[in-house]
Amino acid sequence: MRSKVTKAIFPVAGMGTRFLPATKSVPKEIMTLVDRPLVQYAIDEARSAGIKEFIFVTSRGKGALEDYFDNAPQLEQALRKKGKTELLEILKSTNMDSGEIAYMRQHKPLGLGHAVWCARRLVGNEPFAVILPDDVIAAEKSCLQQMVEAFEETQSNIVAAMEVPDDKASSYGILDIKEDMGALVSTKGMVEKPAPGTQPSNLAVIGRYILTPTVLQKLNKKTVGAGGEIQLTDAIDDARNDGEEVYGLRFKGTRYDCGSKAGFLQATVAFALARSELRDDLFKFIQDMVAADKAAE
Ligand code: UTP
Image (tube, rainbow, N blue to C red):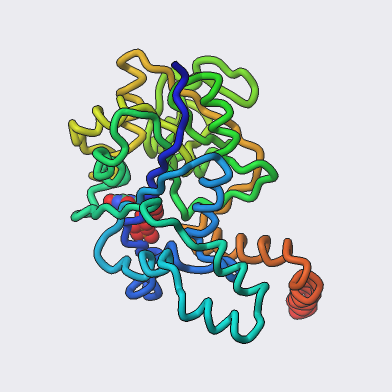
């Protein structure tokens, strides 16, 4: 029987140190691109791909994230009273149904692989998606939807992949390519954060995965990898060593690394320019800034 992917894990237990001091009290995933928190983009993407169960792996200090997904009846009533129907609809579209969302604590930040492992009992014995909300992907067809379609064909592990320049490869998990079939590549290995110059290709793994339960079993070993953390890529490669296929999918879309300040700012500008009510003013503002900057040179 062919499996369907209906569960997604959102590992959000990291400390978000690159955004200190903001992340002292605001979880990184609640920070907003224009007017929507990062996590809302992740949820919308998951829904578009047919996900029905949303599993968040959180940590101390992430209360604002849980609150965000609560219904807000008083706020809804106030908007209704004031006849602000458009805002009311926007608000309602962010509501989660009871039982649709679950929270699991990662008690120590032992790494992404460990965070995923924390959700193992909720996932059970079926394929599942992993979405890192700080990778935001603008795409006509959502990245996860593209991956689910590829999974329907392959029924194997799939990671989202994108080309990165040589000098950036050591910041990513990098695929060792067995066969390049265009959008899809099969792999014969995967290295987390290779030493500069040793990367087997320029195809990097970014924050979307569809994985088989074997990867969870491999995570049981709690093998410590690059950076002293339990790495998800190591467990995926371990599953491949055991005979499972691991594919990379060159998705169509633009990925913003919203875990970094530069990426977050770029995404903010790109998403704002994509909004008709903001575009003209912002565009003019940027043009004026560039002109003033050039004049000052
Ligand atoms: P990052 O490497 O971006 O770490 O984690 P971080 O803590 O979020 O941010 P910085 O580097 O300190 O600024 C990638 C993803 O893995 C999750 C993070 O929440 C993020 O979604 N993660 C990482 C965990 O859930 N647990 C961990 O132990 C580590």
